[in-house]
Image 1 (cartoon, rainbow, N blue to C red):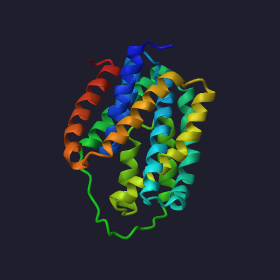
Image 2: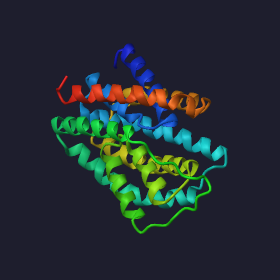
Image 3: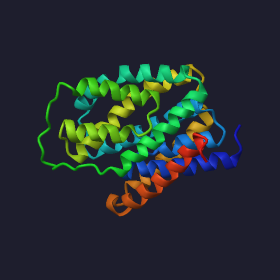
Length: 247
């Protein structure tokens, strides 16, 4: 049984990640490095983080459904493309050695930081959603990435739905939440079967994620996003350099 202060740290980090995921995105760039810095093997940290992801997205999906914002049939049609990729990605993640996974994690942290610095284009809420023959294969690849490491996947979904399918922000967010939930459940099962999930740490993290996400829903997004993004970039960059052994 982990010590109480470890569970409290994870709850706090989870709360911050939940708020970031609602207000900006990229919460896993905090939770994954913190789990590693607390002494959890990188592979187990990757699996444990999925518990919080599933719980958070169940909560978000129910919230959107209560507000009558969901288009579940459409979201599921997108998610069906992502699920096979996620299963393969999760399977590969459980087979890779921790030393290699830590190197990959450190590099991807830096890549995600760079994507946060690059401004994203916005879309008109009345824009017509486009159809693209590339949407299915791209969702399959995103599913693979999400199953493998998940970190920063929200930004990638946002980019695809914004630029490729020309969706407005609300539709993008709703579809993203449902798709991530759909592929995260089977991905979590893969990690659990491989023994790469610490359920106690995972549920402590999940409790924080749910709390932070609920609180963030009551905060105006534009008031806090810029400040959180700056803090996130600095924190993740430092953690990435530590994981890579540079600091």
